[in-house]
Length: 111
Image (cartoon, rainbow, N blue to C red; front, side, top):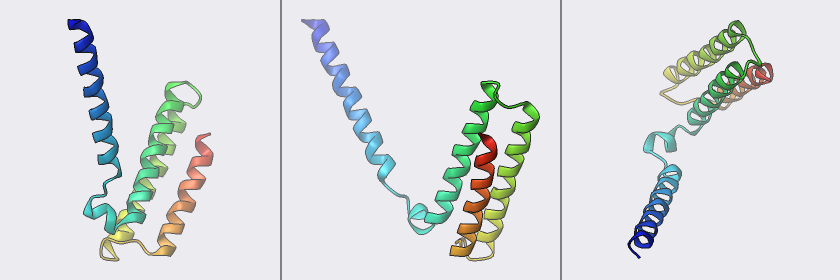
């Protein structure tokens, strides 16, 4: 009986933790609410960084190619920061579209 209670309490704890994480993931910070295009660009860069690392780890791309792809992503990040610095921390629609286009080109090179 004691082990069943422990299992039940453990399952409840896991369910509460998952529910809390899901709620926190959906809540936007004030910065995210005011800079949705920057959040999108930075999120895509993080995903592409992960994809490059996975491809390299699996041996599908060489270290040199991974380095070039990371460097291309770093240029997009620098460009995003430059745009934001010159427009009061925001991106214009044209800048957002340009950054997305560049991210798409890099994404196709990842594989």
